[in-house]
Amino acid sequence: MTTHSPFGVHRVLEPSGDAVTLPQAARRLDPSPVLAPDEVRIDVEVLNLDAASYRQLREKHTTDGAVDGAAVRDEVLAIVAERGKMQNPVTGSGGMLIGTVAEVGPDSPLGLKVGDRVATLVSLSLTPLQITDGLERWDGMGERVPAAGHAILFGRSIAAVLPEDLDPELALMVMDVCGAPALVRRVVQGYVERGHLPSVAVLGGAGKSGSLSLAAAKEAGAGTCIAVVPFEREAELLRGTGLADEIVVADARAPLALESAVRAAGGPVDLTVVCVDVPGCEQPAIMITAQGGTVIYFSMATNFAAAALGAEGLAADVTMLVGTGYTPGHADYALSLLRSDDAVRALFQDRLDHERTSA
Image 1 (cartoon, rainbow, N blue to C red):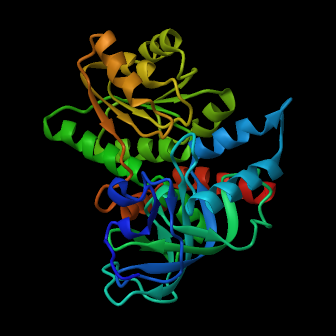
Image 2: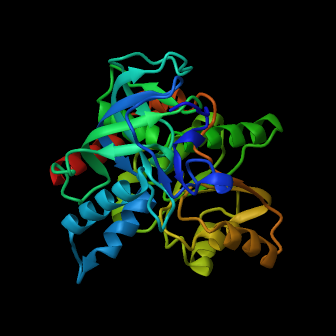
């Protein structure tokens, strides 16, 4: 490997030549273990597929209500083998991983050393990846994927050393969605600094990014917080936690029903955060947001054309933000919420215990 780029362009195999692009947009990457001077090689322990990607794969391989876990596993293996990365071709998304640093290039700026256990804070959709165990320990029935193999981090990648006081896989679950609470905190603080305590609605409030977003909104000084969940069983998870002042059971894809339910709970709101992993929530989110308000789309299932055109069609004067997954200090902040909020920690621990039991 004689030439390299801190952005990983040298790893792009397809397209090539003048059409070469960045790794996330590339169809195929080179997962070779041979490092460029600023790269790091990680021995993989666990992959964590993002929710939108796993849902799509699970639904694709479900017949008469029965999930074919082996087919899900085989498709993940096929994607990685073909693309040199885990990037769902339908959703475009991937997830993240934990592992141990195996080798560090002499010019790596990441501050990692051999033996560090880390979580990658960049998507698997742009991370060169090779699987060597056939995912033999995974039944295809959950987002958590025990795996063996290696991954490559570039000079402009991000990774965090796993904290010693937390279960590594618990930390991974938090880091997987750590961009959401950090961005919510920033937006809420902006309102507070202007002398207004914003009302906030979180679609998917009982999920990973949703519960952390509610905690961040409260911590940053939000006024009323409304959690929107699709089922009563998820509402029960939130009751008594203090994360939400109001809990609404509604389909976030049903615009009129959602708008009515949120209005009854005190809406429209100043800030709407979309944390669901299904498409079709773009316009409903706009409808429950007050004129002059803000919508954060923190879902890989979002159709951004539908969001933009939907705002136009509704004559909605709202600021729409794309949750990029990165805000400076996002991992440390999300972990601090987990440590300080017993309700958030319980939600995450219950989810992890369920996945381990199901594995």
